[in-house]
Image (cartoon, rainbow, N blue to C red; front, side, top):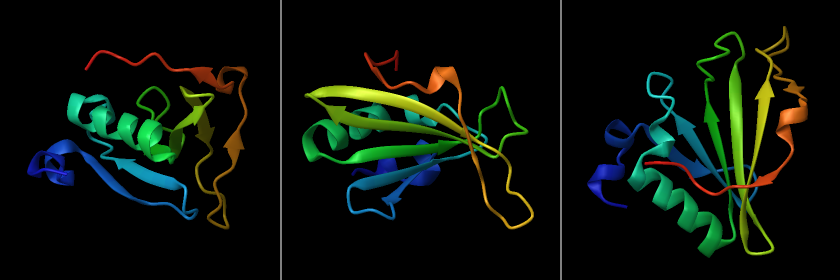
Length: 115
């Protein structure tokens, strides 16, 4: 990755997840749409479509700041880029975040977005 992909420049920190097939992307809470920038999105799309990794983006949902995190998951299925969104509760007394199921979190083919 070039200098333009440094976390302080692009607003996203990439790292390996807890599974060898997951690339984690942590988005700066002050720039929740940073993952949608052309250079960042191109990297995400290439990792998923060419590398057979899942990319899990962790971002604070500005529409629901009371929720701890929203996770946007991209993966490849039948050579199509798929997306599913999951929301999580704030940490409970034990520090655990719980998944909030919603009818909107059905996986769907992702056609991209405007960069």
